[in-house]
Image (cartoon, rainbow, N blue to C red; front, side):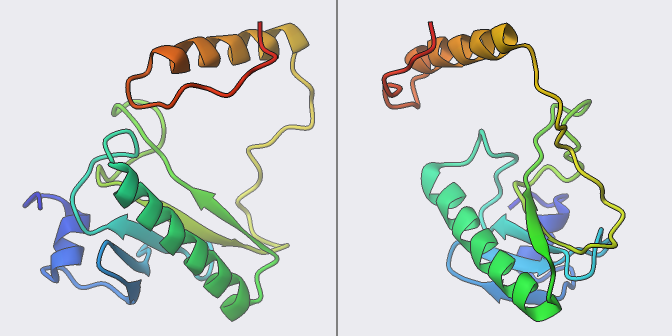
Length: 154
């Protein structure tokens, strides 16, 4: 635990929170600045700053709890859908404001004001192919990754 980490303090009980669920690896609680009704945060119990720093077991536990919370918020609030958002940042980009790995479970409603990050415009196919090639090349040299699947990327 990091003494100055808000989420560590919630996990330890030092700070109050409206807990929704917990297990041996994760805690789910209500966001105090909700983007929509039912906005839940899911965190690992162990302090880890972001998804790239998490071990596979913690990340899988967070993902499983986020999936459970997605079902719960859609059912409890009759939401039209749900967004799972996990932000990472070096401090200048990525929208991460608390540096303890967390997933936002955001119920979505037809009249919410969140908008969409997705664009219907198709990108340049050459740029997409080049991006795929760069990812495959990087993955081949990533010591934490299994060898990538056979790819059609050049």
